[in-house]
Image (tube, rainbow, N blue to C red; front, side, top):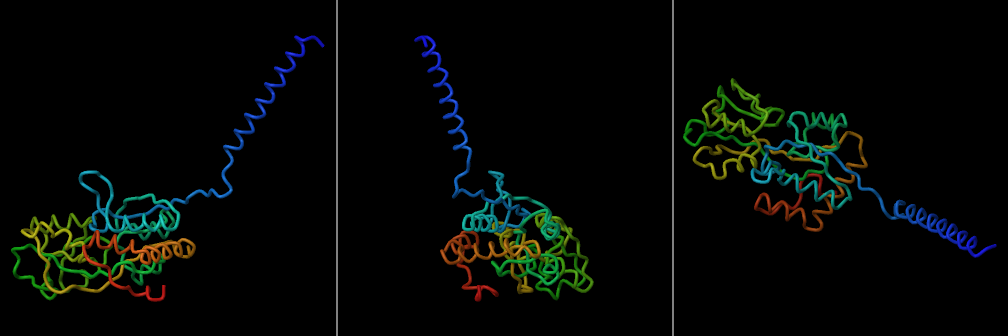
Length: 272
């Protein structure tokens, strides 16, 4: 064989080796690591006019609040990502029930009727209802004075259910709490019945317009809603909640948003 033929043969062999090596490297890079697992992403439904639990920051346009921080922190502990989905509050439980979303995290009170449709995590917040009136209103001093009055409530809430039981009251439901406060300010309603921490948040800085009257009403507990029967996800949420309480992160978030320390435990937690 001539030198020229040998040289050509060597070039062909070299090209073949490079091709094999190149494809081999390509396949090796594309193959996932044995220890690498893809993070699941869970869709979280919420209603963004419920500060300090969830709202939209006026400057950044981002969703913020205790619930938002909490579910993201649970995700970090349990290895999942969160996709936020804003919707009307009255549609959240139904969206979880049908599987259109994975979780409902929006200051949702754990109630018997809702437990027929979805499962709830262990409680993470102890709340109550309260009554808001205009600052210049001296006739409504408590729940007894709401008989026959015009009451603004957010649709689908425990506040709406409570108000409808008041004798002679004219109850008007609104999609957002902000609409309730606007209606009260403009004189279209005599009072608001809503969750106390949210009422306190709205009044802060607006004491010239609103005030809370009377005692708090109907103690209640918030939980994270999960599709009924999805024990794997429910266990993951409860596990993440407990880890946050054990490592102190829950207390940090609680103090950040409510400026007080969380209670030692809530019902259901003592056996968690």
